[in-house]
Length: 160
Image (cartoon, rainbow, N blue to C red; front, side, top):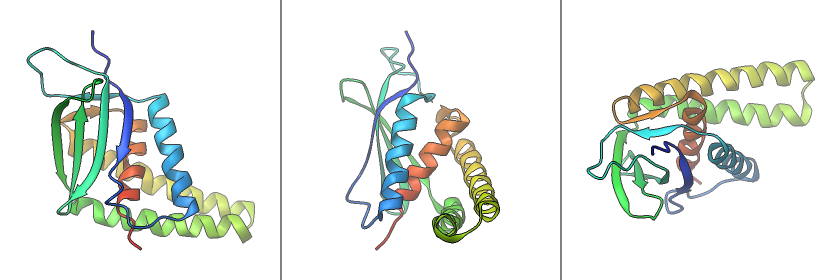
């Protein structure tokens, strides 16, 4: 019976050079929320009919996102590789707006915080849709899963 979901996700720690407390919190929340509720269905049909659940490892290698997909027993199924060129701008914009958001939390009015948060959500939503498009035909994901995966992709891009 198909169980198209992620039950474990890891980031290749060698890819992450630095992160602050805010980014670490974003990573923890994204992983927690992702594991609580996600839809992740690789589109390749496997000879034995395996259709989940999945254990996933994300890493960046030679400027590309590698999504390692494993079975529940940790045996490898496949790796999906995506070029990250189209994500550079959304990642940069997301980092910039997150910085503004964290600064606003400490010294801005509630209205200013809400304005920055709306902009942050807009950038995040657009990037999630772009990720869904890039995964089309490779992995079916719902919108919330794409948002959480984008957060984790951003974490992989943090440089000291």
